[in-house]
Image (cartoon, rainbow, N blue to C red; front, side):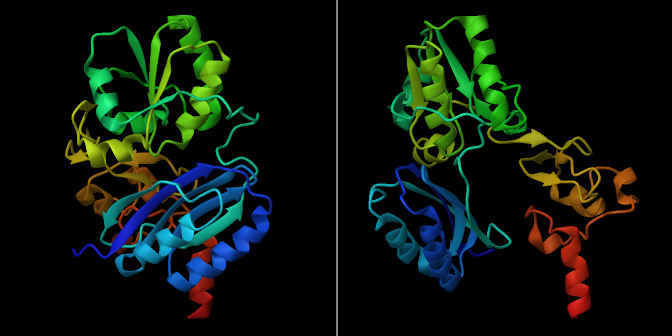
Length: 297
């Protein structure tokens, strides 16, 4: 399929005086551009993932970088054959990343460029490699030597940091990575506050590493096996059974055969969302939307 769209991932912690005003401006601009995605804006800054048509890429980037304080905001790109999101959501969120308590972002770990990260990863130095993503993302693939985080959501990480401290102490070098980098901004600050003195974070996250270095140093190459047929797959789906909604891996053949469900039992459940193969692994639409569409047709 032709590559007609670009996925944009961007974030920056920088003060915003009137986030709700900015939200209205964002909506007006990106709706006209036909963009889709999720963008969260608060007094802390901006965190967004979005897809735009390739012809609109430069206009979108220029708009994002024209804001005061966001001129140098990195924008990471991934090509895609279709829109990566079903719709455009731009809304206020008090904290850009879901934590109960505020984090002091005036302290943070030392950035490592992908090449520097690779070099340190391959060294024999005594170090801890921390994956700032969730446990199921680690299952798909991770840096060699990275511990599997016992975390279903980001709110579980403060407790995980305490466990790391109890197990390893605070003197070892700590290398941490996450998908795009934003979680590591917070995690590195939290670890320094807990007494860790040598904390390093991967600049631009795994996305930047993959674009710059490739898969060297990566264990699993982003592949795991579908439990049903043992075919290689790196695609997660939410079960179409609304009362299950389990996150599971599946290859293209199995997801079609099970109509978006994780098991045959879920296929016969009373509240199963309609499976739409053309949408690939995009999130399922909410149940009530089907009834809205049906009544409108």
